[in-house]
Image (cartoon, rainbow, N blue to C red; front, side):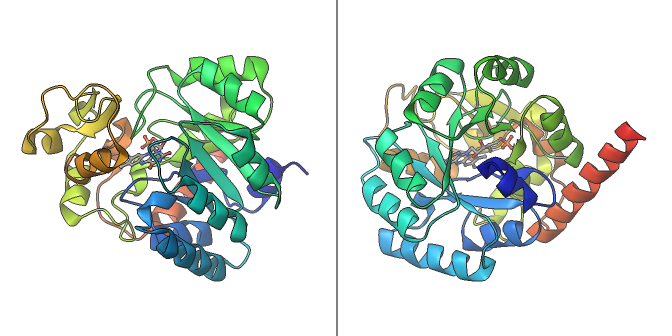
Length: 301
Ligand SMILES: Cc1cc2nc3c(=O)[nH]c(=O)nc-3n(C[C@H](O)[C@H](O)[C@H](O)COP(=O)(O)O)c2cc1C
């Protein structure tokens, strides 16, 4: 069985709950992975490497063999990368999601204990480079996604990736209903990759005001801009309006400055209209599973 099939066999539906800066921590990850999806978090959400060590210990203990994942920002501006990678190896994190850089040494380290590496990409050149570097698979980040979204239609992105790569692929961008996960499968992806839909989960670390803004926003309220950090991302308009933006902060920003910006200017994808209440993650997972099963039955009956 391939690593992706092995992961999939342990899930109720083929869905990964995406890592979100300042949002996903121990509670959200464990709630998702205990309820049939695969929870993940960015290692930098733990404030120090010692805290990350404790988080990974706690998650491993609570999940007792159920799969989960951690996201590493592979960039020279991340001073914690080597320390965090050592902890990922120590705790044998089943799924490692790499952003920005796909580095053979890091991938080898994850492979040393049987872990799987998915690299997130918004275009084909980086997808090819990640596969050449030895990544097991890709996360296709299409237009409308939360965070650093791509600009390509998911149809184009998945089709172009499938022309050269048959291995594990997750698709992201506004996935907020069980039928979207099924649609991702129909489009040739192995997993749906869901971020924003979990921001208003009770277990999310987002402040109450951010959760409320998720409830009040719909797709028209999402603005794609590079004015916040220099790299284009989707943000909720009301949070942009409430903060004083630096005038066109183009160019690379230090990770610490980027962290400050994301604290008050809140990212979300076009799927935000599906958030209607603050709910336990278990309820969101259950609903996604029911919706997926219903859609599958309707399509195949
Ligand atoms: C608030 C927020 C923070 C995010 N932080 C990260 C991150 O730290 N690392 C990362 O790889 N992706 C990050 N993302 C992107 C998600 O992992 C995922 O690609 C995206 O949320 C999927 O699109 P969706 O929000 O439309 O479901 C973030 C997204 C959001 C909304």
